[in-house]
Structure formats: C-alpha cells, structure tokens
Length: 306
Image (cartoon, rainbow, N blue to C red; front, side, top):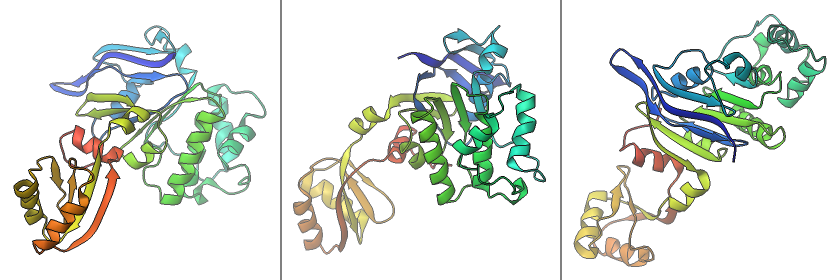
C-alpha cells in the first residue's frame, strides 16, 4: 500500500517541553486513519506540522512520497483540512462564503461550489444565512470548504467536537462517503473513541506526545480480550471470592459495582452460583469484548479520556 503521510522522528519542543516526541506515523493510501489521544496529547501540534503551519524542532515529514521540505506549496495543494474551527461570515450564505474561499484558493471551476455543497448535504440551504446554521451544519460547511479543490488527503482535527448525537452521525456518514465514494485518504484526530471505532481502518494512539501504538482496527478487534462481566452488590467481596475459591487473578474491579473477569471463560455459571451462595446479589452477567475505549485506557495505564 502506498503511504500518503509518513513522519520519521517528528518532534516539536517548546523549551524543555516536548509536545510531540519522536513520532513515526504512517497513513496508507485510501485509509481512514484515526489519530487518537486525550486532549493535550499532541494531536493538533502534529497536524499543524503536517500542514506547514508550524516548523518541527526535528524529524522529517513525507507527503505523497515527497519530503515536505522544499515542496511545501506544491504538496499542500493536494490537501484539504479543518484545524480547530475557523469561522465564516455569518451575514452571508454558504455559497457566498465558499465563493470567497474559492477565489482565495484559486478554484475557478464553476461547478465546484455546487458540487461541494451537494456532497455535504447543504445544497438546498441556498438562502439561509450561515449565522442561522446549527453547529453541525457549520461543520459540514467547513468540510465543503476543505474539499472545494478536490484534495487527495483530508485532515480533520476533532470534527465532531461539541456536536449533538444527530450532528455526530451526520459528520460520520459524510466522512465515510468521502472515503468510499470520493476515494480520499482521511486523517481524523479525536478523543471520542467510540466515533473513531465506527470509522477508522487504522488507528494511532498518542499519549503525552509519543505514539504508543499504530494498528489496524481489524487487528485490534482480534487482539482485544473477551471477558465475563458481573454486576454485584459488593464488588470487593466478589473479588475476594474470585481469588480464594477460583484462584482467579486476571480480573478488574470497575468501581461501579461490576467486575470484568478475563480468564475462566465458560465458568460464569459456577461463579454466579458461588456469588449467590455467599450472599451477593447478582444483577448482571454477560460475555463481552473490549471496546476501543477500554483498550485505550489500558494502553495508557488508566486515567480518563477527554
């Protein structure tokens, strides 16, 4: 598979603080790549370096097989992006806003505006001022602006941030269609892991500026562990029973009255029987698999996301 984004030892330091530390990133042609990390992990700093907005302290960036050094202007013409959220003129319509941007970008194709608005589902909103748009509509308009020039690579920094569930679903469907129908390679940074899990082909997990893992979703699903989950009236007592009566050490107390047990699969009936005999109330018993969020938290050694 051809590589669209490749970084080698990419580092950005501010004094003694390394916002991005020796990052080796590989985004393949046609992939939706989920760039995951907590807020402050270094995702936006990385994206700004990829787009030439800030200079790396050290390391190299290759886009479409060419070094960004010396070919920045040429290579960046092949990329569309949303970094954070830049505003629109709210007293103008979507078409009028895009017309301004098209002129600035040197897009002269007459149908480019109509095509971009149709792709993002705003082609019927021709008279509404952008000031009357919902946040989700503004995000879609941002994507329309990013694809005006038919880029080969689309970079989206937290595109669903602040959206309600309906808006998130719309953006997710749009991103999927751009990859499937328009054959764009897409890098999407996010801390909303459940959304990335539904979109990405490949994920890179960034923590404190360092890439902890780069793995395909297919491989991640194979690797993730199946577990038994019990919801009980006293999780600490249940944990003692697991150790003392079954010799189980590979389990997790969740802190919400539930336990996840990663060994002894198929013995949930025996476990349930002992819990009840010892006076515990069992309100849930299920076999489940880890989500991407579970995997993320385990990989970074605990903590919270966001």
